Image 1 (cartoon, rainbow, N blue to C red):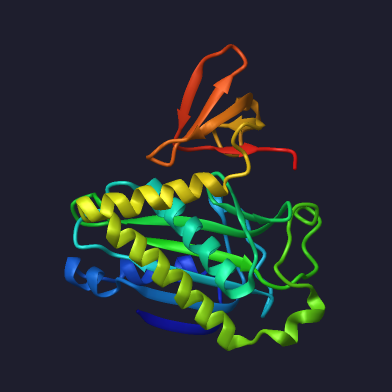
Image 2 (image 1 turned 180 degrees about the vertical axis):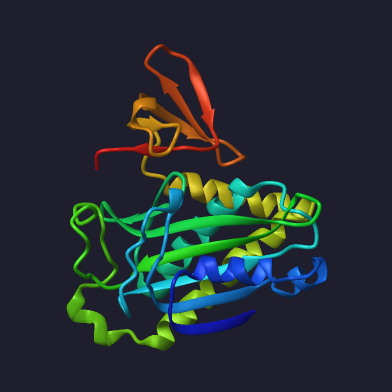
Length: 263
């Protein structure tokens, strides 16, 4: 792995995509595989649908891991699922916390969101996804969250504990999460052993989900509340799709969109 630790940047995902776009061919793209872009602060951090991701200086872990495999990426949805599992494993090892997953890309602790994940693809000359920038933002310390997210945002530590964790911890955590993620993704590219590794990761993803069996509001078109409808979560399938049952008894497998749930 190659780690680039920056003081401040607009967005680690955007920087990763800039580097991918600057590549002249597949060989240069492959050379960026397992590159980590880490920043102490983001001025324009973003989540899904270009929503702002609050990234104040030294309060969280903000980084992007570049995944540029030998062959095109066939299952983009798996990237987020594998990243979520990697984050949960590392948070347990580093801080002893048991994190839960809200489909598809949010990590929760004690009912509060402490981490968001954003995977963005880069298209090669053949029009296929040749690489992905997998952005991960973890709220390590409590801070003055903006009013619009203050009721649901949380952190691993209180603000008073900031001195107990330093820059070195963030670098090690970014590297640990990335290594776990790359191991899962590489396992998924192999046939027999990889299938077992992927199944184990998806089983863990399901086990860490706190929405199975719960009533939710499905928003199939993100940002369009008019498209929302109520449903009950049945489970998560082997393609990381959310399985839901509507009030009329019909069932759907969701590979995109988002859900809302009262916690």
